[in-house]
Image (cartoon, rainbow, N blue to C red):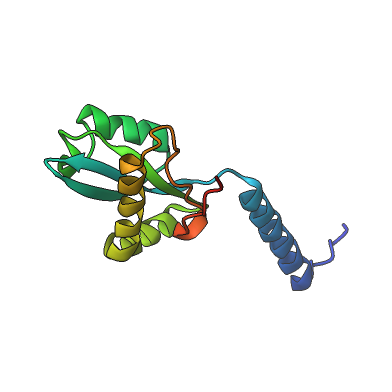
Length: 140
């Protein structure tokens, strides 16, 4: 009868650490799991905005415009103003919470859209919004 030598605890922790490192690498390479978005609308003489999070931005925008989205967005034509990708749902929900309270950022987005809609050149594109809410300067 042969008795197997017991495994050392060091071997187990090393394997667990390498598995965790591989999982982190996979998560870093994968697509964003969630998005935070800002919508804008001109309704009854005023500009309004809406902030939310989703897994699929285009599908969610379609729901808002069809009247099956959030109750506060029904009956309006919405335009996508800004999106931010996140790896986890919790990160997206946290950013949504902060954006809902950041009136200055939302106002800056709406002012940029309003300026573009009033401009003499109707073919001018909407402002380009880069990550974390910075509006890029347009050349031209």
